[in-house]
Image (cartoon, rainbow, N blue to C red; front, side, top):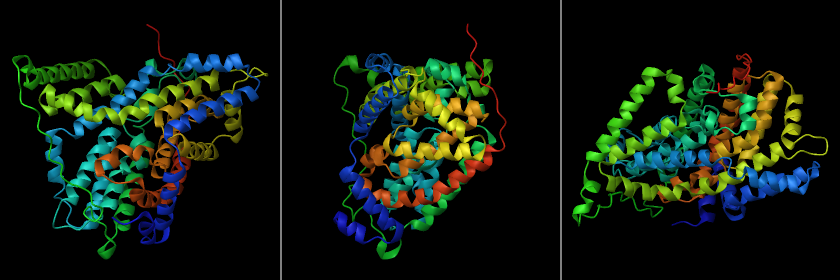
Length: 479
């Protein structure tokens, strides 16, 4: 395998700069959990500087630490359910068939990018594993010589381009679920279902444009000829044969190896889904985070066939949820300090930030500044749902003050939130484990995508934002 220095020297232009940047971040950037810890202390010091007493700060920290317990579990389940569905035998067979479709090396790269983004619209956790397995399946073809790094970067485009514009968007899911919203945020925004966020024509159009742009860049940036680096060159083992489940050894394990219970659970879930669709508006049903996770979890159980195979897949998926489980409580604590610790003038940090963004004014300037702020913060706090809880109280209050549509403000955050993923390798980790690669192998290609995406995203949030009218927040009715 070539050294990191040789990898950089073999690249040209932007890719060479990006490879150097990737090497620097790998050497100097700490784990994302450390960033979250630092964020808590920075916010605490800011609150003290604002005039809050030490007792107010520590009370807000401790009282708010577990505010997002339900949402933390929900986001971990997004990753887990996506992994379980992607590794099921039927999906594995589908991936093998899809791998035979591309006819050229470059079309293979753009094909992976398109499918990873399409799947990401349904579930970003599914997209990571699905895209990685598809890249591996194409790399196993003996009739194509495809750059494995470009394939891997294409598989990441679901997370690097459009994941937050889809149905598993953390911010959109949170805003559509009253029970998961912190009371302070619920008071500002009310409940925003998918009809006001991801299913607006403006958001869908933006998603289509970004997908098309990403596919074109992936196609033309894929190396050809002598510049191609294959999986074999990188010494990556492409053997994806599934591990055999141990045979049943005692009578009590009979149901673990039977398809009866998964089928019954699947039928009950189908019955529940039909009942929901028959009695509630479609957007209310698809906006339900709990319902969304129920369907995906039971789908994984049915696709794996038996409880034993399903649990084997779950065990493999659990490590990918670790970052969410330990980071989100820190984001909850940050949000609590921002919104609850009052300063000497009776204002919280959140209220000061809201005033700052309100002073920017309405229209294109507001959306562009919010997008840029989200990109910069996302480089250091790589968490869509957790970071939204930190930003949302003052961003949404500012949007209300200047008369900006709240649903579009969520989507401005969402489309900007994906951009830092093209530079910060935190969300690449599950994919890198599937691919058997390092972050530096992919960032050369993803950084190139970032250079094109940033100006296009800023232009889109500005132009499309002018088509919205302000709609006052609607509070959920109490039973």
